[in-house]
Amino acid sequence: AGSGVLQNSIILRNTDNVNFVSLQYNASQPGSEATLRVYVAESGWVTLTNAVLSLPESDLASGVLDTIKIVLDATGFREFANEADVSGFLAYNTPANATALGSIFFVGLHNGSSLWYDNVLVAVPKVNKTHFLAGFDVPDSGGSGTLTNAAQLNAGTQAGSWTVADAQESYLSGTAAGFDQGPYSFTAQMASGAPVADGAVFTVDMRSRRDGSGKYNGIRLKNENGANSVSLRWSGTADGVSGKLDYWTGAWTFITNGIFLPNQAAAFTEGLATDQLVVRMGATGYDVEVNGVVLLTGASYQNVPTTINSVQFFGDGGTNSLAGAWYDTVTVQSALQEGWGPTGFAAWADGWGVNIGAEPADADHDGLSNLYEYGLGGDPTNPADRGLSPEFSLLEVGGSNWLAYIHPQLADPNRGLDYHLELNTNLLLGVWANGGYLVLGTNSPGGAFDYVTNATPTVENHKYIRLIIQSR
Image (cartoon, rainbow, N blue to C red; front, side, top):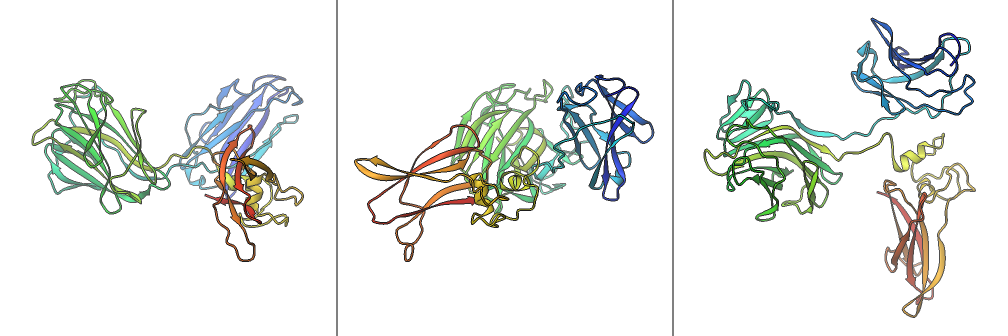
C-alpha cells in the first residue's frame, strides 16, 4: 500500500513465455484495502473485488498474510483470495496459449510498490478417474414427464454404448433413455474397467415409479467376466409411496423402507423427485448409500470383481407393469481422493529442497534408507538425524518375563506405510519371520507419531528383532 496507484502483479506464462493469466493488486493510500484486478484482452484491467485482502502497514511490518490460489483447467481459471472465490470461472483470453504452466512472473509497477511472497506452490490436484459417464436427459422438475423427441427403442438395438435386451415402453432421447413401463433391460459396456482394489464408486440420479410391491426397478454392476457383482432393486407399496430397497445375497434381502422419494406412479408428473444412489466398492465388499444416507456397509459381492466393466438397469414385474424409471448422470469413477499434490513419502521427499532419490536410496549415507527416515522422522539430508529409535524393556506376562519392543509409527492415516516386526533366533542359519510376538496396543499422545507396544517371550537363549517399514 502507499500513495498513488501502486501495482503488484502475478503473471502466469506458458512454456513459450507467453502470458495467459495476469492478475494485479493495488491500493490508493497507506492501510487501504487492496483492489484485485484481472486482465481481459478486449477490456484491459477489470476489477474483480475490493476489500478482500488484509490491511498491512505501508512497510509490511504487521505480519498480516493473504493466501492467493489460482485454479487452472483446460479452458479457464478461478482465483481464490483467502479461500473466497473472487472471480468465478474466467475463460482464458487466448486458449491456445494455455497449454502448460512454464513460469510465474512477479512484478511491481510503481516506485514504492512492494509485496512479500512465501510458500509459492504449483501442484496438480488429485482427481478421481472417470471410467464411465452417461448423461440421461431427464426433464427438469415441473416438466410434463415426456421425453423430448423420444423414439421408442426395440430389443436388440443400441443407443450409443447401451444395448437394449428388453424394451417394453422404453424410449431414446438424444443419447439417453427412460423407461415408462417394464420389463426393460438396458446395459452399457464401459470403455475401461474400474479396479475395485483402489476403490470404485458408482453413482446415478434417478426417478422411479413404484406401483405395487411386486414391481421393481434395479441395477446390476458386472465384473470383468460379465458376472453380477452387485445387484440392487427397489419397489413400492402403492402409488406415490416411497419404495423399499433390496440387495442380492443368493436371494433378495431387505435393506430398508422409506428411503426413496415418492413420485406419482402413472406419469411422473407430481414432484419429479430425484434420488441419488451410490455404491462404493472395495477389494472385498461394497457399501450402499441413498440420498446421502449410508444403508449398507461391507456387503459381500455375488461374484468378486477385479474390475467393474458394465452397468445394467432393469425393470421387473411383468409385461405392462408400471415398474418404470428414468436415470441421469450415471458414473463409475475411482474412489474420490481429496487434497492437492502428492501425499505420503512423495510429499515428504518433495519438502527437502533437494532430490533425495527414491525410497530405497540412502541420501545422507547414514545406513538408513529414505523410506525408513520418513517412517521414523529422520532427516535424509543430515546423517546425524536418523529420527526416533525403538525402545526396549522387560515386562511380566502371566508370571513370565517378556521383552517389550516399542516402536514409533507415523500418526497420519495417509502415511502410506505398514509397520511390523520380524524375529529370528539364529542370524547365521535362521529365517526372519513376521510372528512370535503380540501387539499389545498403540499409544497416541498427539503429534506426528504414535507408539506401538509389542511383546515377545524370552524363553529362547537368543532372539533378534528388527522393525520392518514398507510402502503400501
